[in-house]
Image (cartoon, rainbow, N blue to C red):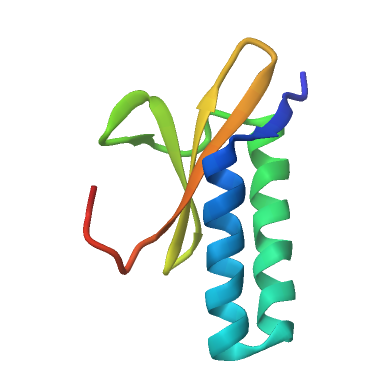
Length: 94
């Protein structure tokens, strides 16, 4: 079974913010690489949602590492995966 991927409002905001940071620091080519990584991770999650570890903040929330500097937090539902937010790993821990 393949789960549908749904972005929360916070996921849209944090994804856009990280894209902007990457664009400012490293340019459009790096943004495209980041987007491809995210799409690959989301494809993996849609097929095997339990592949990534449970997050420390909540056992129902999972954390996927997109890059050493960025993680994606998501929650598994009955038929869908909700992407909660993206996190810049260089920030203060939650």
